[in-house]
Picture 1 (tube, rainbow, N blue to C red):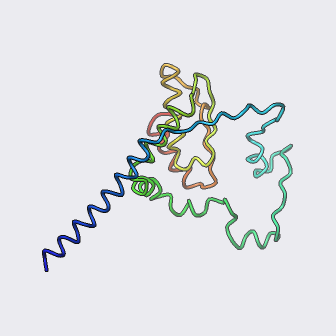
Picture 2 (cartoon, rainbow, N blue to C red):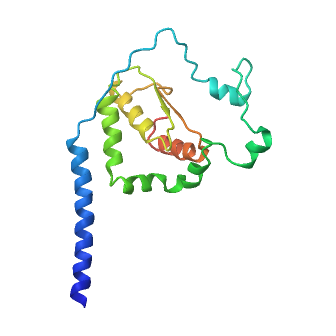
Picture 3 (tube, one colour):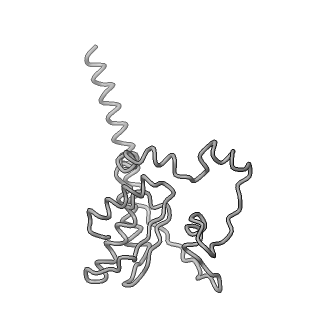
Length: 178
């Protein structure tokens, strides 16, 4: 009886290791594809427009009301409100790491080192920054390119989850990238 139980455990471990190795090999063999997008011509971009609109700043663009009125908005969290990520922020980084078998770190490094092609003086807008892992890598890379100095406003992270932003800001401060 003990022998068949041990064999079952060995098979399970072998299956898990095989699946993990298959995922790792697939990612390592695959070459990331970078698609160059043309520069927009004559399209003004207002990065702070949505932030200003939510704060009610003078001159901010008008924000369209949601269908259903005020009562419907207050009854349930809006799509994209960040509420779900506020609830999982404390376990987000560790869950992301184990669910991706640690490959999330490889993907982020590949993004910064091979896809973004950062140059001294570049600015980075990290939308849906979460806990700021990509923003931190971008800021570190910009510091390396600038001989240890990068403007404090070189990277801007934006996220609808206040708790994810709080955790990201703590990580940024720990690395001295403020």
